[in-house]
Image (cartoon, rainbow, N blue to C red):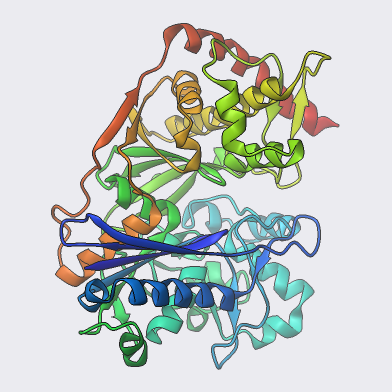
Length: 481
């Protein structure tokens, strides 16, 4: 048996797989996000561990025979979170999360002072990444910064509690901006730019390698007959890639989750800094990936649903199939945007509202707006040398056939939807746990069976091409005012 743990933003999820990677059980526990000031986003690191203990306690109680033979555990997690620990490994403050926008000024200062963020780091310095968060703490909470002995990512804090090891994997660590991504190693000049050194960092392992073993007392608590190894694991998007089999160069997926992601696997480090493409290490050795990322995908639909007092799935079900673009245009920049704008200050908008604009037209425009933003990501990836012929869809938004049909026609790419089952980050993490336990990769990262493939509709594609051209004019206009 193999266990995958995904430390997300809204929940911790565990998946238990057998030797054939069939799902035996799953469990989850909710998390909350604190927003003490506008554009801030924080979580208590110990809430992640408490949630992990809760889900593993539940699995051990309900599936004791299966839990007894767990041989490997993989970890996945929300990326970029700054978890600051003191010399005794105690959190010094709440973790500053990936969708926190407070460090925009520090981003500009870091880019001006250290050009190697663009070259060795391979990415724009954005508020979502870890390095500028530490620059903010250094400037605004100097007493906290002075006591910081170690900086860990969210899943790696869970690893510390689980194994006692300070370790991280390549894919998640590449999102800190402290790595020489091409060399797959920490970069001392980039660390020095934020007042840190190698001693503040965990050791690095590949995502499919063992990083340690479960503490003996925890193995006894959860009934493990032999102490399982804990794999390096992955950031959530690289773990999702492992879950859908996107580990060979040229394979790709689209995630319609809280954020939206276009992910393509590469055989080399391939940055496109000018268009805010993310270029990171993958979770398997000698492999990299590129991502275009938008900050509010299903979050945009969730916002509309809350505003209207509806459930998101009720809005999309009421809309039904569409025969063209919405008359209202929507910019999904509710918490700023990454690709291609790198703009933490921009905010969303509806344009073209009329007396006739109701629930369905607003829902339609939100689905269109997210698809248009992902089209911007696709164009940035293509400019960086990526070629995407088809995509696998993951995330909660992929359950809406209407949304996937819109997205396929907007992107001009066929989209495959996996058969019923959870092939996301927790599943990919479990696969990495299996790889670490078996000491091999072959045959462990196959694509899942498909439910349906949706091809672009030529008529819709033409209409959406014209609508996207109009939509792209809105960002500079909104930015101007």
